[in-house]
Length: 415
Image 1 (cartoon, one colour):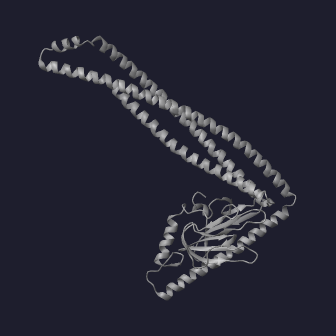
Image 2 (image 1 turned 180 degrees about the horizontal axis):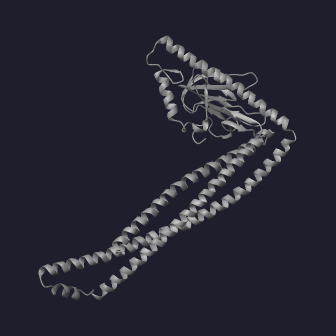
Image 3 (image 1 turned 45 degrees about the vertical axis):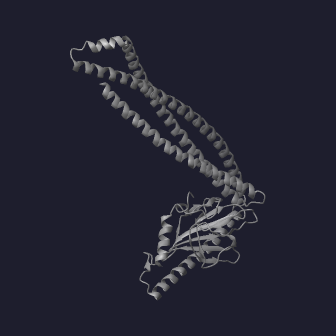
């Protein structure tokens, strides 16, 4: 293999290593961000549990908290393992790159040493003058002069290359040391997280053993809560249908040709259509309905935390938050209704074109029907139970022939 081909091969090898390192570095940043989010979630669960311990927290709530904590710790351990494994690959790549650079540096040093020896043998000014004067003609003398200049430049270039590769080698060595320290830190953090997970699982098992002694009573609590949630959701569904019928009546009465209907038959004015489009465009970026919170119950059908044979249907999410926490509109819109139930806490329904968001279990309401609200505007305050729990029930619906519940985790930023 010629020196030229060796240079080409080395260039592409270095390029491939650098590209791989950059890709891994981006993945490492994503994992680190996720790890920090999980740590914050665990901290919030802990702080909310400490606040609730000042009062007699319900067993059902304690089991939910522990379930969430165990899940968060398991995810944290998984993400930390991924980080450690990725760091191992990065360390290996770095070591390979260091080996390649050392080989290149050694080859450069040998070339440079040979040039220095050759240069030393013909370094005197007299020998250079004699080299030029011994030329047979002017053309040959000119070529010899150019050769001397090129040789000098080549020496300088070799010296610069050695300096550059030496610096790269020093940087890579420093990076390797930092990576090894990061890996040791992650391994230690994972060891602590596993120990804490074992303690959480033990506490969970002890709590479940207590529950099994009176399973029927706790199952009744869950059933009552589900019935109450279903009753409120039925009322919200009725109000959304009512809003849709009212919009369709107004459109038919006015004969406004600018009003259009969605595929599901919801008549929207140009303003309402633009608002719905903006709401959809912000999917995954909508604000949280509370400033700080932890999701205790997620969307969809899921087993009960008390009795896995019993299923829970959730049309939204239950978010645990701080006492006296303010409720915020996740997006601009119009208050469709302030719902007040007998033996239950108020709820607010906000319309965003053919989308609706509901905020349930409030102690105070700051808005009224027909009010225009902006993103993050305070619309109420979350109710705090005698147990110390402060839970907001939040849902998103898309209106049509029937209101279709949406999974909030797909709409709210990093839920």
